[in-house]
Length: 243
Image 1 (tube, rainbow, N blue to C red):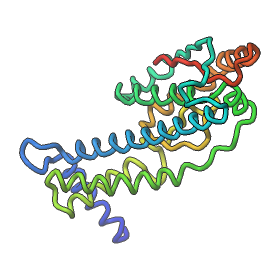
Image 2: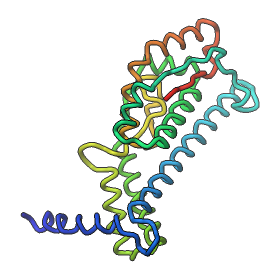
Image 3: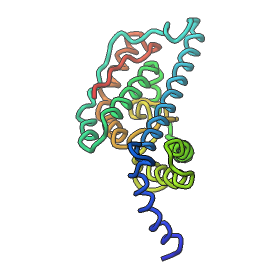
Image 4: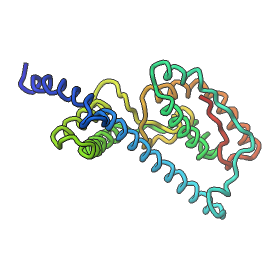
């Protein structure tokens, strides 16, 4: 066994033990601190996506001579997407309900931030999906940096914090194999989503939404075509996603 592999095998159990141990009596464990760091990072990316969608719709409204996005018309018919049969699998696999709701909200808001014509165009001319490697790499590095800072604030030594944060970040965004934390498209490209994703979320939930997309697409496309035929192609989509 090479020296590097031997060192890694020696260090990992120590780091795992540190992650289970509070820095001070009654405090949070290292893993609890880093779980909070990850949740904060997810929320920050979600806020950026919301701001991007709002700015894009404000620009669209101004091009139409309207004051802002709130003046944009929305399709009068509301379409309901029932994703429960897909999302329940994620629940059975241990996905937290808070993450299910967060991804559902992002998914639904993303759909409702597009026009009928825009969504149909993407459905019929599915763009290529850019590699998400750079997003994962950036998220991993950011998580390690912020996690180290949060652990030091919690009372861990700088050396402990650095090892724990890097281990947690590599575990959350591995460079190979299955990704427990995945780059998320809101919505999935099967439903006309933007190929340039910016958010991340629990892979169990994201995979469930990915499975849902092809299943509900036929009814969704029929809904969009009805709106287009009725003269509402330039209106915003009107969708509710049930999970």
